[in-house]
Amino acid sequence: MKKTKGILISAVLLMAAQGAAAASIDCEMDFSMSGWSAFYKTASGSGTIRCDNGQTLKVTIRTKGGGITFGKQRIDDGKGKFSEVHDIKDLLGTYVSGGAHAGAIKSSAASVVTKGDVSLALAGTGEGINIGVDFGKFVISTR
Image (cartoon, rainbow, N blue to C red; front, side):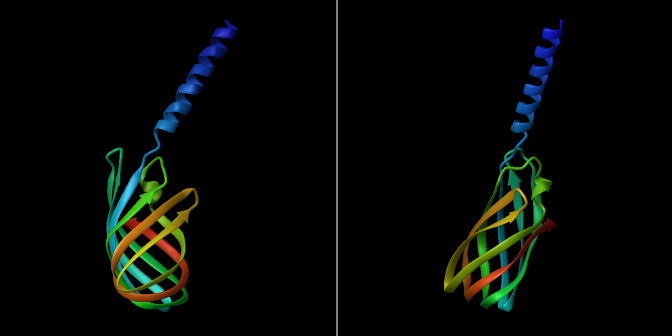
């Protein structure tokens, strides 16, 4: 009887662990944003996060930071890919960012920002004139 209970408990724990692993979702974000920099860098925009479990969330994006950076830029048709999470709301909050950039007229950029265990790889193309190195925060909130 003890052996049967042990097997039953082991099976329940295994199923729970598999259920937790299956609960991970993949999410992507489409976005656009624009901003400027002169030692201090700021930009804002909006986007939509879509997950493979059907969850969708319209978001506002803000970036703020500083460094040796100058210019004005706009990103159209930006794409973001998040690391796996358990719920779309895990993606909201403040990410740490840093990067180097240079562009004139037509430019493209890619970077990775992190928030604890969550990472977001960003890529986009746009227009602007910019050059520099910057560090700061990348904030995603509901619209």
